[in-house]
Length: 125
Length: 111
Image (cartoon, rainbow over all chains, first blue to last red):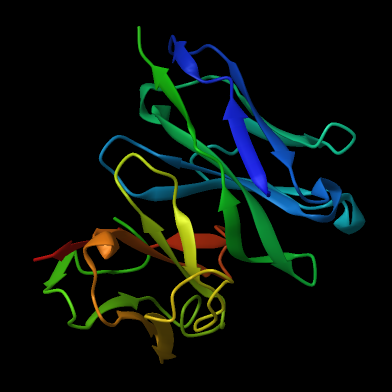
């Protein structure tokens, strides 16, 4: 069974850091790009960023709202994707989801499946 | 404000058909066949329902179908069932630096 499990969420003060993990099973993790999304309470989905597979350079792209503060990385030997979040703001409060990402020619994201169950990050003093 | 425009809500009775629209621009929906749709029940993770405009993943009911005309994509659900009541989001690749854009979501109510 293909499965993604996020962990690492919790309550953190503004300006602090947090690292989320996304542990994959049931598929060849290294062959796929991985994305992170978030959903603020009562709001819609927002793309955070993605990391391509190593075959396509393992490069990353980010939404403007998190660029320079968030970093996505991957450890293919452990089938884990990470989201390092620095300089957190109250507006970063959300449920964070990771997804496996289908890429056209390894470069262009076109759909996201499956999704993990999400982990809640609350940024508050 | 979301990059793609969806109606905030739609409703239908069991057995009826409904269509949810998703309007973008030539830089996203209109320019690429990379539109996908996601179903999200309250407190649950999103689930892929349609990809590449009109393709259904394995396991998704054939009551769900997708299409596109110009800058507007559509999700049609036929033979509405109570379990279809959920939020639906459209997404598209975009040639802008944002790469991925979403609609604001549509709440489907089955009356």
